[in-house]
Length: 179
Image 1 (cartoon, rainbow, N blue to C red):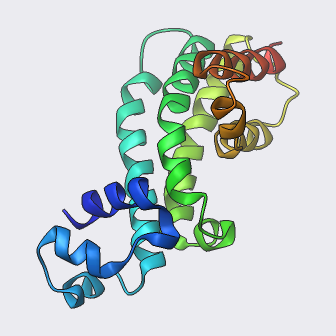
Image 2: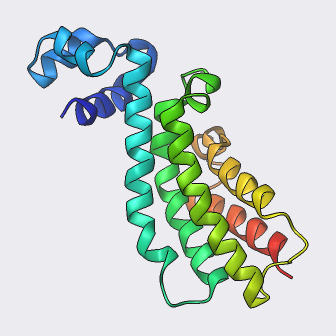
């Protein structure tokens, strides 16, 4: 309940404007109750981000194990990931990147996701659809960074649509890996 409400507040107000008093009021608990679970506002937001990453992992797990060729699964997973990217990005964009990326909970979740992506890329290499000479850790990092890059200004300006963004990013990623 706390994380759900914090997520909604972050989307509505952003990190800077969100305050723990309003969060406590919306959840219906004392502010100290929130601080018993999360020692700081930053820790709370990291909790929201990590939970979002776990939800994405759970949502994508069946796609990693689907019976399709690895490159097709990778393309489908990229598309789904891009759909979910914008809301998580809006939540963590205001935090200092190091505050998020250096957090042990974030790192552990990122490492679990990286294992899944690495396994799929290795399968695609074994199937001959991804260039075997490309470094799997570098490919995983490139794919992850695709989702952390800010394209919101292009979307808001109407320079591209969300579909065009997804198509372009997926096409560049997949074509760049092909053998």
